[in-house]
Image (spheres, rainbow, N blue to C red):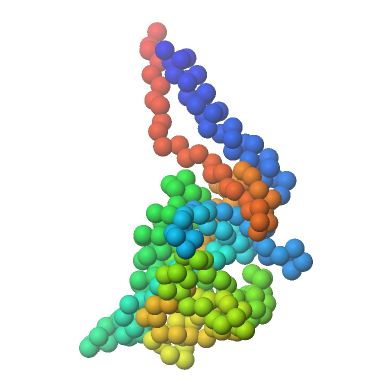
Length: 267
């Protein structure tokens, strides 16, 4: 009986790991990398989200901004939807010590956006996909880039033009603002950083791709999420990493059930 149980356990483990062994071999040939000035970005898909005008769910396309040790920072290529950063600008701006109306002084983790990204938004990913994310100690699984991130040349943000992003058909059909064609027909999107010019606002991308600010209650501003991948858990299943043929990831199976073998009987 003990031999049979051991054989079943071994067989199940081999069946689970075999596809990812193949994927790992492919991944070793072309590993993920961060932004490169000559080669540009590497792209991958993870999760799904409504993206067509009719709301059809499609894989979310991400660009890899950087690989840092065992983690890779990825950013949604498109603006997925429009929503305010927080519904109460006084609460966002005020200090906790404000006697009349206490707030949280621009702490992104307490905003409606942060709660949405780490709550309802996670339903767009399978448990296996969520398992390959490296949770940020401060911001959770999903977050927005900071104002400084959007000026980081190592991430590929070398000019105003490089910061421009475009909304999906779904986002535009559901309230996302779009600039005029002579500006590029792109859309504005939030950062997680509070404005220093107006503490009721957060930094965001403006019409020329420059960084400005807008009041956090603005409803037609875009959401462009970011997250960290755990490089030790993800492997490439298919794709070449280009925007038209992004990598499809295969996660290493997580053992959720352990089969207990019989204890040997005393002789």
